[in-house]
Image 1 (cartoon, helix red, strand yellow):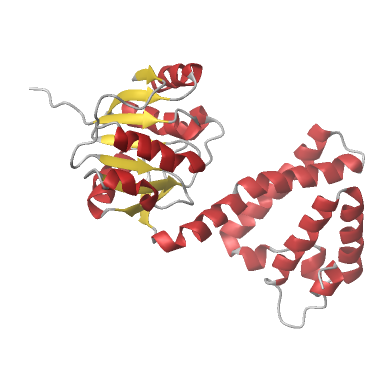
Image 2: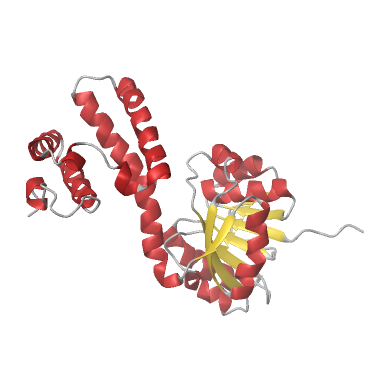
Length: 286
């Protein structure tokens, strides 16, 4: 006798939701049920990517043991309200989201319908879902919420290679801010660096090719020795006049790039020893 897999309904068929659904489908741990999105073409495309499920544009009309709300953060609460009001939630069903910043309490309306709620945030970028699914093994997945829901979700994430950790709800904003700085802000930082090299005369593609080994080497140095020992350059050496001149040059190019240069230099000062010759005033911050 074949045991039927628990069903997953997906609300929000964007990059993260479709990536996780594809991984669970391929791992054979969940039956993919309804794949819901307000955009018909997005839902249909997600079903093709996942390789299973039924596209829908409304809130799920068929119950599921697990419902993942994978909308943007500011739509999660409303999606949970709509789901709770649909009447399909059963006692013991699990409703969860994958926001890094919001806690499981944003789903409290589902809890009031006797469902269990949780949040699990995979610390991975999903800009390219195909690449993200291939590289998912080893991804840290920070979870919190109702203990029974967290326990039920743990084997699902472990089955696709996730490394589950617990996160205290009150710490989620700082946890997610750290992830944003390392991922999203890194993209913005690279754009600023590319623009500096472009204005120095390098074609954009050549600028990135020049920067890429520098970035890779820096990450390798952090892996090997930690952030303090990996810090190099004019600020680490104490070259005050160079730092001052580059603050002025970047500000003249673009005020936002100038502010980023100064702010990141100030943060880098935290990695320097006491008595360092460069101060915040050299960065134009005091």
